[in-house]
Amino acid sequence: MNRFVELTARQYEKNEPLSYMGYDVLLEELQKAITKNGGIIRLGKPVSELIVEADQVKGVVCAGERHEFDEVVLNVPPKELTKLLSYPSLADEFGEYVNQSAHYVFVYDIMLSKRLRGDIGNLLDLDGGFYINDYGLNNPASVPAGGQLINGLKFLTGQEQLDDSHAKGSQTAFEALLHKVYPGWEKYVVHKRMINRAMVNGIARRTYAKLLPLQSRAVRGLYLVGDSTQGSGSLGMPCYDSAKKVADLLS
Ligand SMILES: Cc1cc2nc3c(=O)[nH]c(=O)nc-3n(C[C@H](O)[C@H](O)[C@H](O)COP(=O)(O)OP(=O)(O)OC[C@H]3O[C@@H](n4cnc5c(N)ncnc54)[C@H](O)[C@@H]3O)c2cc1C
Image (cartoon, rainbow, N blue to C red; front, top):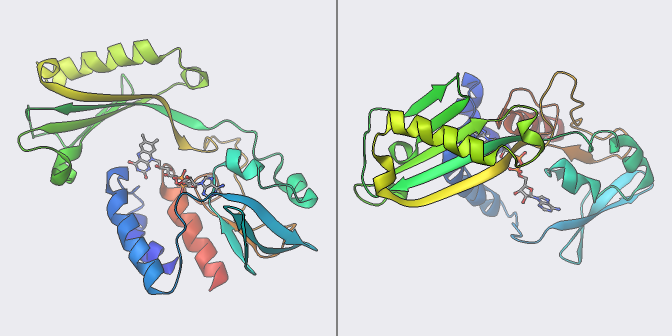
């Protein structure tokens, strides 16, 4: 976990969220650090149970196998956390946290066969609530030669986040912005990806939100990290902050 903090430290110290487009680089480095130090990563094998005895964590059940540990750090969104709360005092402790609303954005990514312009890395349209990122400028290997990958986000209002009824309007508004910034873009579309409600934070970070604590009061040896915790900052920042704080508690 210290390696994780070290890898994200530059962004962390600047108090700027790490671009989510760079996560693959971070994850590769993290994977190397874990395996080099004797750790094991079990991909595609969700934790289905948290083992607790006499208010002390004892391990987890993962893909039907029991793994014993004195300490467990959970990094799961609230919806998944709910499934791990079978121990009565944990259900009491976390029950009120897990039913809060999440924070969603509308995602619209477009791959173009031709690079239309390269002078805009990031664009924030405060009037429309849009954010555009020229992904290929950060990660050229992700785009075919001469092409352009534009990543778009729309920040949804509280009402728009409730369901998908905003989708058509969000798409139209986003395309109107694209016509202004990248005139003629529609002639070069190779692929489009739209996600009507992509989850940014498991618990929306509003002033009245009750964010998960980093350590359980009811069960010894149980820690929580991730974007729904009391880690500070916004977007991905609470993940790094909570990971650092829990790493400090454990070391
Ligand atoms: C479109 C979009 C753009 C974003 N852009 C940015 C950005 O530019 N900068 C930024 O800082 N942040 C950004 N964010 C926010 C950032 O991606 C999130 O805040 C961050 O990924 C949350 O990390 P996390 O580790 O808490 O949760 P997650 O990334 O959700 O990780 C939780 C993991 O737990 C796994 N899991 C769930 N249940 C179980 C289980 N039972 N057993 C085992 N594993 C389980 C899930 O598969 C998942 O991999 C963006 C989010 C979105 C949706």
